[in-house]
Length: 193
Image (cartoon, rainbow, N blue to C red; front, side, top):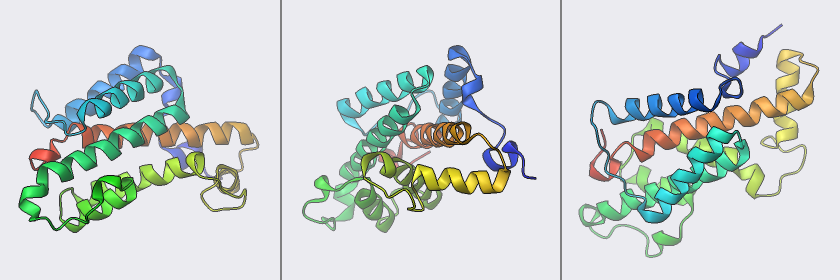
């Protein structure tokens, strides 16, 4: 039988207290800064407010809200990176790029190599983690929480569906926070770390 750690990894931030979650965030920020003591943020004031909300919801264990807030921060930051890169792109962006959502912004950022491919992929994962909460999904859709929980049950044999669902949401929130920190503190508006 497959263990929880085989499926989810060994970090379950539900087991961490407020201070330990803050230590987790600070360690991820230090890793993203790669030795620098500053970062060039491109998300603007709205992005900063969304970042504050992402941190607060993560610290308080409001996992779905963490996913939403991280999505907002990332959408704002990717748009900011594109905005500060416009001059070197020689007006090659679509006319209404400012109205694009995170998926469309990632397409443009990828097209112009503004972000590393592995970060673009992690950002797509974040966008996909948010979709079932922001867009209606049938219970049997592959990305619905119901279906994902069923797959995890089949892999692990764990009988407690509610626990599986919570663990999936916590994992998505933790990955969203890691990805957001990597983007937000990566100074990609200046070309990256």
